[in-house]
Image (cartoon, rainbow, N blue to C red; front, side, top):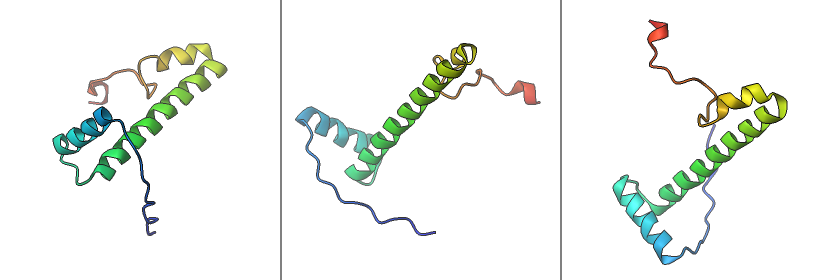
Length: 84
């Protein structure tokens, strides 16, 4: 399955945000500003998904909602030792 071609966009950022984007690109060895913006969009999408899951858990079962507080995947922290 071939991926869809990228959609070209023109954006304007305040100078401090543009500097941060450039620094992020360099620090993380990204090939382009577009790749840095893509990472930001993915982070926003992940954050929204976590918020939506938490809202759904609160709506459906307040007990389950406590599992999501501070933990976006709803799982308890583990070092994996229970699987050995």
